[in-house]
Image (cartoon, rainbow, N blue to C red; front, top):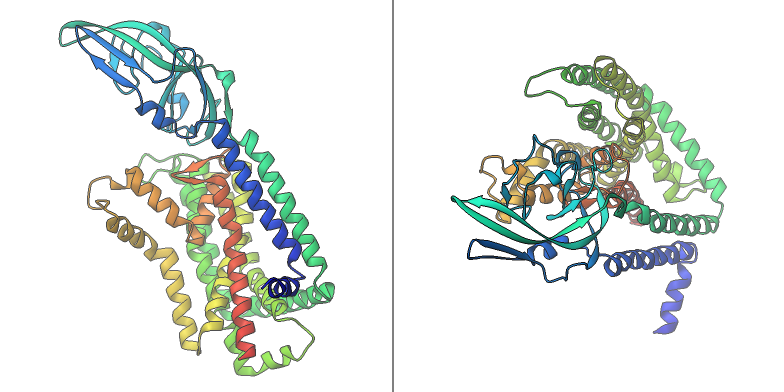
Length: 486
């Protein structure tokens, strides 16, 4: 048994460093998770629900299991933006009792902030406007305090003996301040493992040259193809027109109004995926089938070239066929959007363009998987069109169906605002490269990747963005090698 496993391990000589690196990354990820579990309370809502509220004899008592003076460092998500939770004479009525916040409003609260940390209310003795933002993952070191206040209920004067949680601004930090150390270590391990694995590939430089020549051949041939000329003209006009429209809507008061430049670029990313993904599938739809029909595939295989190199070269070439015109169209769309409206953040614009190329590569490699699997040209077209319809048009209906099956009433008014529905939609979005692209662009409208998208953390979103094309490329290579052996 041991010798057989050693033989299997030796067969993976090329990929041994990468396998070791991935194993170490998993260890670091476990340490990362353990660190937060040991150093912070990661379920603030449970602490908040643990309070006891007792009423009697014109007196209300609020108590927590923890002792007055105890401190706990919490890790959670800012459910609302702190700038909307700063107390002032316009936002509170002095003497009113707030059951949700478990306190009585008084003038001493002016200038302080009540934060909603994953459902737990913590009073911060300072104004957090502009310091932290909605959906950011933060750590808060809070203390149990006690005080007495008074309010009126049903004409009776009530004394509130209250225990609550308070913090100071200096004890609130972004979780990314720590996360970046772990993420950096993981990326370094992957980079080292990848480098040593690639260095073990025989004739790597020769194979990369073959891939380069094949990619340039596909690029020159594809760019001149009538279908690409038509599709490129169509999506350029479409993206530029939508960009201009989204800029105009930033100054509109209609129900379709765009709130900001960042909001506009998020919508533009969806429309870009809608048309560009169709072009990516269209140019890739028969690339393998044509090679089979013209017998050029056998001529290609007669050369000293790896199967992986063929798929990689074709994928890169087809990506450039769509990616170069799409990049120009996106730049033009951004220009006209900013002329008519606000300027999005630099990070958002850069990721809109760069991640757009990731999206095109993903759709090309996804279509290559379908093209290799198809038995004839008709099947290839049907598979490709079906994939585009699923990701671009039908996906929302699929989310509705899944939500209905698990018990969410999708017929209720404003059910889209139901947190449970939003969590399902966000998690399912990771299975759609279009939504992954849109959400990744949205991630970089923030200042940190320690952001929660309704249950999907920023790091998981970036991981999905990378894994989508890599998995599709690996499956396409495996299918191609299996066909050649068959």
